[in-house]
Length: 488
Figure (spheres, helix red, strand yellow):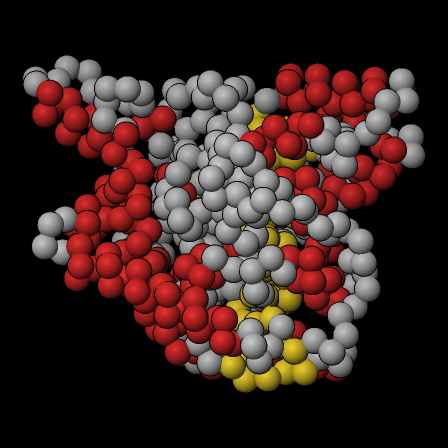
């Protein structure tokens, strides 16, 4: 089945005339029909549109026209990316019927590169969550164990990629929403440096933290997708105005004299023993390959969760104020007055977790509390950024767990918001500091659930980070293992 192939394999085989884009798309669509009723990775599948895109790729190939980097590659995108085709729901009742008048920049870049967009994937509502249980349309299930969560908020993209229901996908990462589900589903997930990938058309959660990135089965595919979506965009004022490096060149060339930092703050209490053991083995591999392993300190890490859950909800409170039942989004049926229109529309349209974060953020920004909470959190943010800057003077990259645990059962933490928030304990500081981070598979638990290694690097170090990840991937087969899926 062609849906088993990686994005690079599909691209190369289409280019060589060994397969067609049409058959690659059809195989993925057939796999979705069989397996997605058990997983709910997708909110919407655009089968007819995808087949038309694939046919156009085949026609262009027959005519000898230039091919894009993703020509014929079946891709899924997270349902918080605006598209002119289909609804953009953010897995929320608030936007259930919202149809965007424009495409996100990353969507345009995918299609300009010839990608075949299969559909839009499920997520925690407005990307607020760590398990994809907060979706208004129902939870996504982990393909390795359908009784477990896939992580979040990009759980749909992670599950679809791991289950071979697409060749690769896009997610968004505000506090770990690419890397954590990638870890729990056993795939590669890359959160780029803030500003490397345009956020134009990404429905905003926390604007100073959000970033779009690739979710793939291999490091090579992550490099391929990043090559396509990275780059300056005049529609995004935070977009970095520098040329994009060639992420695929020298990908298989190992790094020499690399220094890997081990932060004491990312180990200890709360980490499952199997996770600690897998990370230790991965670091030992790098040591045996000639890397120098050095201790580093990130002393303000302990304030990361607290700072994040002030900054992110505060920005969410501001960003989500636009959903008022007037301009667009859900509108209550029979409001008694203007106040009731606002209150009822938002109460009906937003789920409990989104409401919780809006209230947290509004409180943190309110008169008399702004200095005590939001301003203090911004000061902590600077301290966390300084910690990383000082650590990267002693090392080239930092290695640590992505998630303190493997995938947990559905419902196990949904009643305890604090325990759910602690799922992001190793990922939020990356977003706070604006640095790149990625997850690569590095093992499995005794119960057959994936474990992920997180690599953090200085700003705009993606090219070398990908090479470091590829060093590990070439000598291990974790990324080649696939889940046994239930069939419809």
